Image (cartoon, rainbow, N blue to C red; front, top):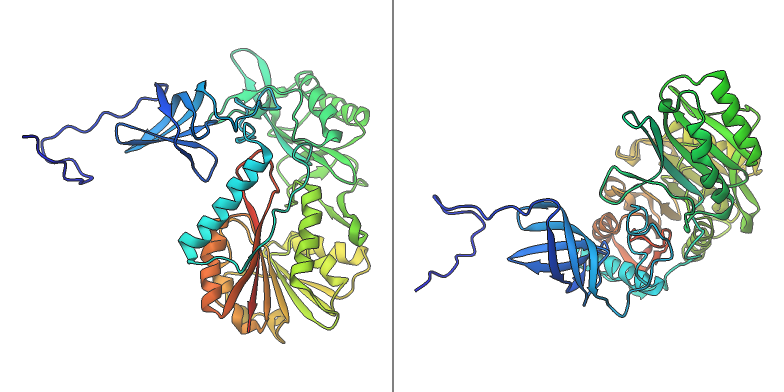
Length: 450
């Protein structure tokens, strides 16, 4: 009689390991459900397959991208039985470009996936659910992205410059003339850019190019060697023809070709303009950013007599609108150049009640002069690794309300558990659809302390 499997993960002495699945192998799969990142999940021979571009209920032929232990990562090569939820991707490059991983899903299904992911992270990592779920905060499904990095690589063998976007799960570059998620002002620049780069005397000196749209359009050229006067003239003539600023990024910080040029974006509802420079963090989705700021003010409900703390304040994206509503805003950021930029933005917008400080927010808050006096409310907008060291000390600041804006539901959920220990309760939460056509989830959560 056959011996029952022990269920142990290790291989008994003298046995042979199961052969690894080779990269490039094709496999027929039945897709059973979706992972939180939007990939389909199937099972073969005890292995779990994560398949990009597949939906539940589909039968697909998948090609292996990589494998480790019992997990295989793959992408859809052919769809033999399609899900009724599948749509034809609006972009012809959706299956090769690495930018839009869930374009084959209807927008409503994308939102449902993101909502489920946030809810599962709260449950799994914090044992929490908000008292109220807010509806998703959405903007345009396409033509939303006001910033994009264009990959550039010199093919020494073919003596040709490759220009485009990185391919999915690859270092290959996909040449793209039109990108549906890019804002309209950047489309003609994207189409014309490859030709001017290939005309340069030394195209191999170009590292990458970034496009920006705000109060002006801008083209940032990252170069790894000095550019000749002739190449600089070609690039400047191109930008003039495209009504765009030229910025250059060599060994130092990015600098405008014309020192008088300024780049920024507006928050129209508050009559604010925020200047920035390439390399500074800005939200790529202007409509959702504006809606996010409005929702943050609505949820936090700041009052005219209050003192509010804005941590990880960046350029002042939240601090400046807050300053128009309260007695004082204290805004803290880890990067000194961003602090200076934010203070300049406050001054140029006539806001004298917003005060900006540089601080390492992993250090004790009680040691900081700006933390003295306490606060009525706190707003947090940390990077992906969250703000655990901050929230462990947050109760000492005295705030009864805390608004957390997150670009990583896992660290938001982790920090929410700590906020509960600090005496805060999760009142309201919801997703922010900052990146349609991708599985990336941003979220907002309101906490109250009694």
